[in-house]
Length: 128
Ligand SMILES: [Zn+2]
Ligand SMILES: [Zn+2]
Image 1 (cartoon, helix red, strand yellow):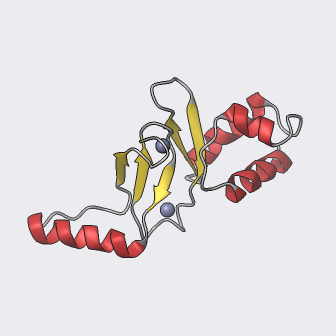
Image 2: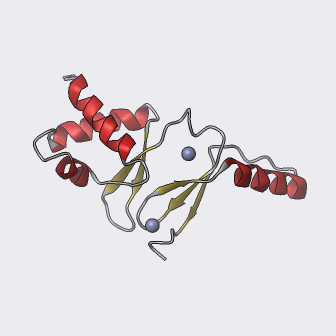
């Protein structure tokens, strides 16, 4: 069974894009979109696809079993590293100058090249 609702997919992407600095659970997304715009099961199914397509990053929220989702564009995020908070699951974009500084530092110290898809784990200022 493959129901593809392009309208809901578009609405979902638009919502995530305009809130790309935050990470949401499916429930929060459905509620924030008005509650009747999209059903939880549809949102879940569409989100799984968006994660596969590399448009959305999925992480586990703290020690819970729930996932949070955040819009991350692979193409826009090519040139920099990311930091992920292990508590809230939110992903932060490191600017490209800091990224190249870190990469240069590591390279000159250990001749190891870290790739741009590396995600640094830690705690964000909100969760510290
Ligand atoms: Zn990024
Ligand atoms: Zn956090």
